[in-house]
Every structure is written in C-alpha cells, then in structure tokens.
Length: 100
Image 1 (tube, rainbow, N blue to C red):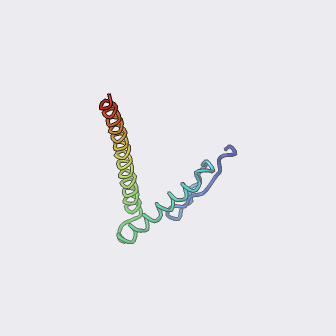
Image 2: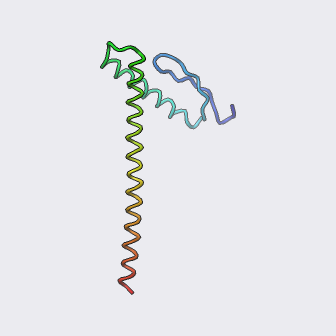
Image 3: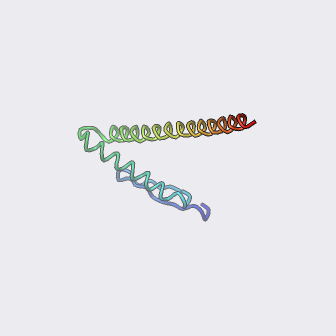
C-alpha cells in the first residue's frame, strides 16, 4: 500500500468488508456503501417474507438498473452534443458561402 492509498472498512448489511483504496476515492466508496444499505433496507421493508439473498439480489438489480439508465442518458447527451457541434459547423460553413 502506497502513501496515496488507505485501508477502510465498508459495512454492508452489518458485515465489514476491508478495502484498500486511493485516499481521494474514500467518499465515493462510502456513498456507494450507503446507497447499497439504503436500497437493501427499502426492499427489506417491501418484502418482509423474502430471505436475505433475495433482498440483496433485488437491491443489486435496482442499483445496476439505475447505473444502466445513467449510462444511456450520458451516451445520448454526448451524441446530442456532437450533433449540436456538427450543426454549428454546418451553419458557419453556410454563412461563409453566402458571404462569398
């Protein structure tokens, strides 16, 4: 472990998971663990008769679905930004052609 890394314990469902991470990423890891625990707790309340494995699977699926939606939204925004740039380039080109 180098000076830029540290060891932390992330708690998920009452279990500690030791991780070695870059110091700058600590907050992100803690927020992710909090998100997992909150999602698990939400499903535990909704489905009281399910076992822990089912609850964890549903929570993992929900988090993966949210991640996928964000990635798709990001991909679309990059595509739209590219179209806007292309449109601006075409407009500039046509303005120059009209001047000539």
